[in-house]
Length: 137
Ligand code: DQA
Image (cartoon, rainbow, N blue to C red):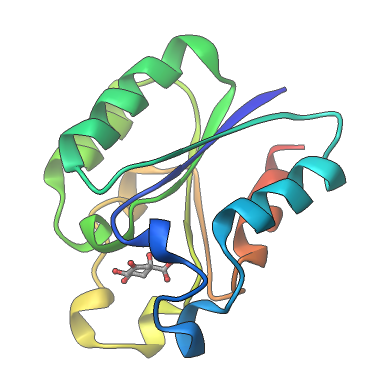
């Protein structure tokens, strides 16, 4: 199985960004752990701070991957365009968040993506990505 993890804006700073919310591990360290744990899965990783680049990657993914694990970060709460991209591709997309967005500011309670994804996993720290991979298996 080929799975692509896509991270959106500011998630390149995991490890140092608000560690009380997002933890102190870098995503690269965590990704290495995931690859070891799920050694039968071909995992790829992409991160961008640019909305259009995330959309381009979703379009590309439809021919190369069996599914996408997407943390669109702040674009979750604003992006009709990313929601449309998810609707436009046939492969399943799982929305993940590190933090429990519903226990935070009201503007984080709205997700434009949740209605169009296969499922949502949030609030388990970086383990949210691990749970998303398990759901594909
Ligand atoms: C986040 C939650 C978003 O509200 C926030 O903008 C992020 C990260 C999370 O993984 O908890 O950047 O998607």
